[in-house]
Image 1 (cartoon, rainbow, N blue to C red):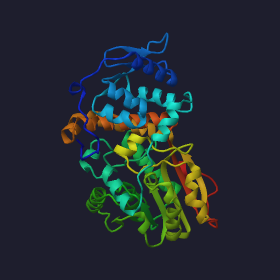
Image 2 (tube, helix red, strand yellow):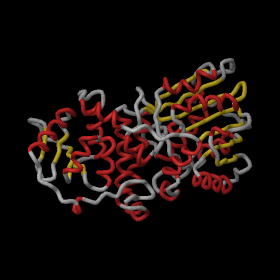
Image 3 (tube, rainbow, N blue to C red):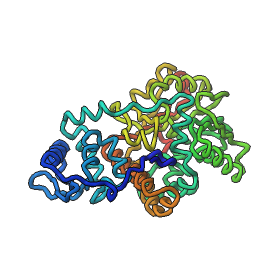
Image 4 (spheres, one colour):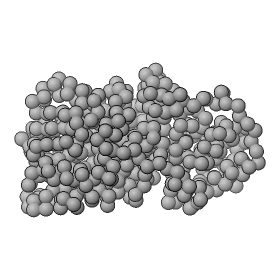
Length: 417
């Protein structure tokens, strides 16, 4: 069976599975996997209660595997199968979920040992779904059109930002840090009253509203999420900003007009590297001679596909690029990169706020969807924290301009005054 809201398989829970006895081969294989991970804090509890750990260790983090089918699914491809198995309770985690995932990421990453299993897992990881005009709309619908009321439970209340916040002061609330992020972007763009701004992928419209209200800009924002556009239009009308903001339900590839500023926050992950040159062409077409642009995106240090389960169940079509891959946007159009900032740890902090709010509404979310949905999103948020803390994921903000733009400020003082 399939949950229509998430696409997650509703695999029968543990009590519905006839657990076979544990063999000597099962135990040896479990021990070998732990040896390859080389993480003394990790242990495995098999479905007969037998615990596997590295010699002379007392692990504080344990994976309880409820049946043999779950165990061999994890061995074949943990990146793909762990999420579904955890979502339906065939795998449970004893101890802090984030710390457990950090240990696993470290064991499977560059710090871990090279192994045949790891190479096999990479071979079995499917390519992201395409991001053509038609497929992009389906991919975005899968994640963003599952109900505005769901996201309102755990995102910031004022601007409904589903992207990395900015914490120049670690004691900031989520609301304060999201406003700080919006202002940080506006300063990087050197936004002025009357500037014409085009935004690619506007979410629930918060950045456009901030630019219009606080900086007096006129914004045209493109988005292919039907529910987000409806929400954004209503908020703009309610706040008296409809004359300065136009939300367009359309793909970024169909942008038209001429603008002083181009901005994209959290959209590049959904573009796909095959379309970076196309995106660069769009930017070149719409940006004025002295225009400025900013792209804010999750990224990586080295090319690697998105976690297979997240790409399949949570973010279809997603791909986090490296900085070198992002240059395919700028180089063919002779656009000059002015500034690059990495906000990786800010995203880890943002996600901790989101996860805490998500957990505080877990019962309500379960009533809106089901238990496997709650477990899947708990894993997605916790796994994202782990990915940013271990450096598996980065968060890049890249500012760019035309090559003959000689009106550049002499320092970065304007960002911090």
